[in-house]
Length: 143
Image (cartoon, rainbow, N blue to C red; front, side, top):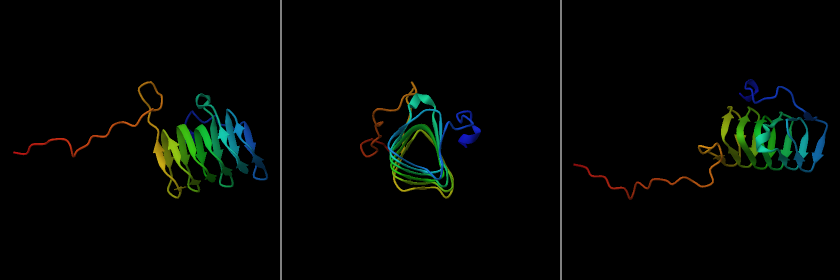
């Protein structure tokens, strides 16, 4: 799990408590822990190493674009993560999840698509889809 890896800062700089509601887009770096409700987009620079943790009581209604995310609450919107996504037991995502690496625990729900974002040799995301081998056009001889 992400919590046992060095990417987790061990603390969170910002807390949205379960008695709070934030309306609007939130641009941040560092750690963000959400127990309350956010109606808007969460955005962190891909190079920042930022981490978002959405607890069981946390709800985000909007798009999330962060390097690392741990979800154990509800997200209504698409999730874009360039590094790591962790979907815990009580996670519910109503939208697509774009990920590079992902952990998903039994009980987590994704009501949308899981879309892998590969990396090229330089560590950058692929720009184009890789070609698929068309087996119908390949010739095979059987003796």
